[in-house]
Amino acid sequence: MSSTEIDRQWTTRLRHRLTRRLPPEKVLPDTQPAYVASWIYVFGVTTLSALGVVILSGFILALKGPQWWHVSGVGHFVNSLHLWSVEIFFFAMVIHLWSKYFMAAWRGGRSLTWVTGVVTFLVSIATAFTGYVSQTNFDSQWISTQAKDGINSTGVGSFFNVLNFGQMLMWHIVLLPLVAVLLTALHVVMVRAKGVVPPFEDKPSEEKLLREKEEAR
Amino acid sequence: MAETLLAALVSLDGTGHYFHWHWIDISYANLTVIILMVVVFVVALFLPFPGRRNKKETR
Image 1 (tube, rainbow over the protein chains, first blue to last red):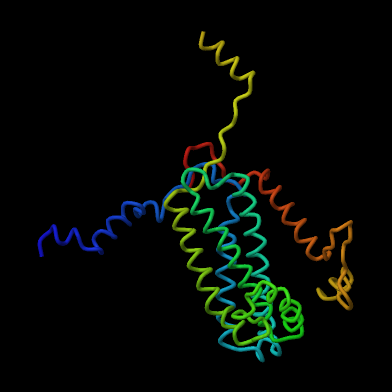
Image 2: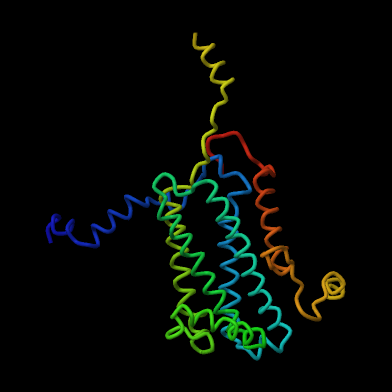
């Protein structure tokens, strides 16, 4: 095969494109800009860490089943771990959202990073909701019977039936987490590719501008 | 012990407690979480970050 033919292969073209946009030093950087050393920048990674605990505790709940998480002490513990990691996940994600909103984090060609974040937030709400209706207790019965009228009024009820436990469980443990994790991965890759958004530059005061003019004379 | 302390703080034996103000109707649990989020957000803006150096890049 000639080198021109190799260059035209889709694998070669894709590899070149990926390494151009995501060189290894961007994927796994050694340093970050100085402005990242602020507490307001920790909420993205807090959300990611909480997501890790959510998935891990979810795996254990899936392995052991409802009888275990309702009756045994360890089951109660893992069930609570799953709930509280979700609480921390949303708590950190909302603060992350606020901080990025006030930083206008879509600046500098980062609009898709912002959009993937927003969509991940919405998908996470749907994932949490299907989790609440899959608890197999009175709480889940109450939530699903309250939600059915709202969902049905949107017309979605024909294929998203909140009273269908099996369907809700499958949405919760297969479809929605898959979408949420893929979107999160895409979001993180985009942050790596474009870098963390810098803060707004300080607007110099009139006094400072006058002083600089004086110095320039 | 922890359960007794929590029970003393908030009675979970009964219907939920709600905050009403004009058209706003929200449970105290949700209101507490929202207030906590705002507090953490403001604290994160002003609390000095440990080991912050005046360099262009940081590790």
